[in-house]
Length: 112
Length: 183
Image 1 (cartoon, rainbow over the protein chains, first blue to last red):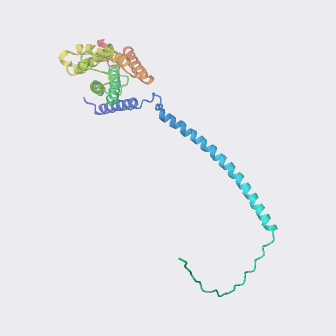
Image 2 (cartoon, helix red, strand yellow):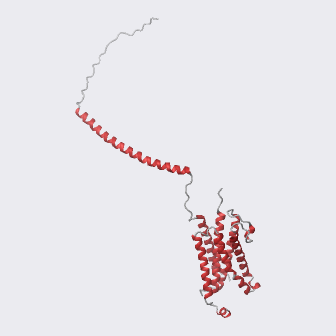
Image 3 (tube, each protein chain N blue to C red):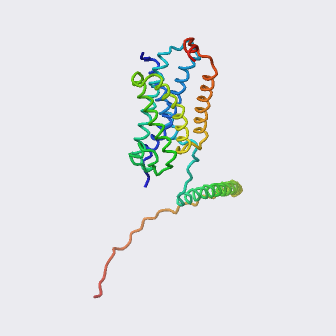
C-alpha cells in the first residue's frame, strides 16, 4: 500500500537534509576569516592610520594657535580703543579760497 | 586558476544526504520489525522504508555523478562501479562502491521477493547492517569533512541510533503473536 503522507514527509526530509548540508558546506563556518594578503593594501591601511593621527595633531595645534591669536586680537583692540579715546579730536583744516586767474595764451615755437 | 566548487559541494552534500537516508531507511526497517508504537501502520512503514531507500539511491547517484564532473578528486567512471579502481583512498572508496551496489541489490530484491523466496529475501536483507557499516567506513575514511566535529557527530549519531535500535529489536518481544510462536 502506498503511503502518500509518509512519502511526502520522507521526500521533504531528504530535501531539507540535502540543502542544509549544501548550505553548510558552502558557507564553511569553521574556516577562519580571510586575511588581507596584498602588501599594497596593508601599506595603504597603515598610511591612512598615520594620516588620521597627523590630522588630529594638526587640528590640535591650529586650535591652540587660533586661541592665542584671539586673545592677542582682543588685547590689541583694547589698546587701540584706549589710544583713540585718549587723543583729542583732530581739527578740520580750512579749505583754501578758490581764485580765478587769466593766463596768457599758450604758444608753441619750433626751432627746427 | 580558481576552479568552480559547485560540483565538489554537491558531491559532499549528496554523500551525506545518502548516508542520512540510508540511516533513516535502516531505522525504519528496525521499527517495522520491532514495532515500538502500536499506532504505526505496518504497510505505511514498509512503504516509507522502501521510499527512503529509493531516495538514498538517488542521492548516491547524484554523489557519483557530481564526483565525476568535479576535478578535485580524479575519478574514472569505471571506478564508481568496480571497487578498488579509484586512485584516491582506494579502500575507503571501495567500501562505498560495495555499499552502494549492495544497497541497490537489496532494493531490487523487494520486487523479486516472491521469485527468490521470502527466506532468501530475508537473508539478503540482513546485509543491510553490513551496508550501513561499509557506508560509515566510507564516510569516515574517504570524506573530507569527517574530521570536523559536526560531521563526526552525524556519524556518531547515526551509528548510535542504529546500534540502539538493533539492540532494542533483539531484546524486545515482538508484538505479532504468530511470529512469536514461529521463533
